[in-house]
Amino acid sequence: MYSKFENFMKKYLAPLADKMDKEVHLSAVKKAMVAMTPLLIIGSFCLIPEAIPNMIGKNHVISQWILTNLHIN
Image (cartoon, rainbow, N blue to C red):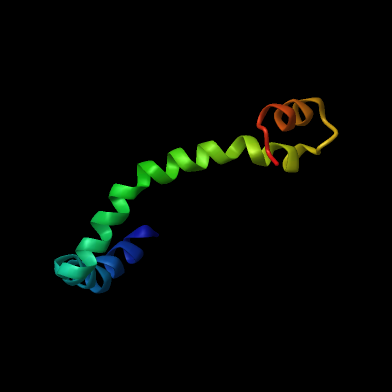
Protein backbone atom coordinates (compact mmCIF):
# COMPACT_ATOMS: atom_id res chain seq x y z
CA MET A 1 0.00 0.00 0.00
CA TYR A 2 2.74 2.43 0.95
CA SER A 3 5.10 1.25 -1.76
CA LYS A 4 3.25 3.24 -4.43
CA PHE A 5 3.36 6.35 -2.30
CA GLU A 6 7.02 5.78 -1.46
CA ASN A 7 7.92 5.29 -5.12
CA PHE A 8 6.05 8.46 -6.03
CA MET A 9 7.93 10.40 -3.37
CA LYS A 10 11.30 9.04 -4.52
CA LYS A 11 10.57 9.65 -8.18
CA TYR A 12 9.03 13.13 -8.12
CA LEU A 13 9.54 14.86 -4.78
CA ALA A 14 13.03 13.71 -3.77
CA PRO A 15 14.78 15.39 -6.72
CA LEU A 16 12.82 18.58 -6.11
CA ALA A 17 13.69 18.50 -2.41
CA ASP A 18 17.38 17.98 -3.23
CA LYS A 19 17.39 20.98 -5.56
CA MET A 20 15.64 23.14 -2.96
CA ASP A 21 18.06 22.00 -0.26
CA LYS A 22 21.03 23.09 -2.37
CA GLU A 23 19.52 26.55 -2.92
CA VAL A 24 21.52 28.94 -0.72
CA HIS A 25 18.66 31.27 0.23
CA LEU A 26 16.18 28.53 1.10
CA SER A 27 18.87 26.73 3.05
CA ALA A 28 19.50 29.88 5.10
CA VAL A 29 15.79 30.22 5.87
CA LYS A 30 15.65 26.55 6.88
CA LYS A 31 18.64 26.93 9.20
CA ALA A 32 17.13 30.04 10.79
CA MET A 33 13.83 28.28 11.43
CA VAL A 34 15.62 25.33 13.01
CA ALA A 35 17.63 27.71 15.20
CA MET A 36 14.48 29.53 16.37
CA THR A 37 12.54 26.37 17.25
CA PRO A 38 13.75 26.11 20.88
CA LEU A 39 12.83 29.74 21.52
CA LEU A 40 9.37 29.22 20.07
CA ILE A 41 8.82 26.17 22.26
CA ILE A 42 9.90 28.03 25.40
CA GLY A 43 7.69 30.98 24.49
CA SER A 44 4.73 28.68 23.93
CA PHE A 45 5.17 27.11 27.37
CA CYS A 46 5.23 30.58 28.90
CA LEU A 47 1.84 31.37 27.32
CA ILE A 48 0.06 28.26 28.61
CA PRO A 49 -0.78 29.65 32.10
CA GLU A 50 -2.49 32.66 30.55
CA ALA A 51 -4.64 30.42 28.35
CA ILE A 52 -5.87 28.09 31.12
CA PRO A 53 -8.62 30.43 32.40
CA ASN A 54 -10.04 30.65 28.87
CA MET A 55 -10.01 26.88 28.52
CA ILE A 56 -11.60 25.84 31.84
CA GLY A 57 -13.61 28.95 32.66
CA LYS A 58 -12.77 32.01 34.70
CA ASN A 59 -14.93 30.90 37.66
CA HIS A 60 -12.92 27.73 38.27
CA VAL A 61 -10.70 27.68 41.38
CA ILE A 62 -7.52 27.08 39.38
CA SER A 63 -8.41 29.92 37.01
CA GLN A 64 -8.96 32.28 39.91
CA TRP A 65 -5.57 31.38 41.39
CA ILE A 66 -3.83 31.88 38.04
CA LEU A 67 -5.53 35.21 37.42
CA THR A 68 -4.60 36.56 40.86
CA ASN A 69 -0.99 35.37 40.71
CA LEU A 70 -0.07 36.22 37.10
CA HIS A 71 -0.63 39.95 37.63
CA ILE A 72 -2.32 40.37 34.24
CA ASN A 73 -3.71 43.85 33.75
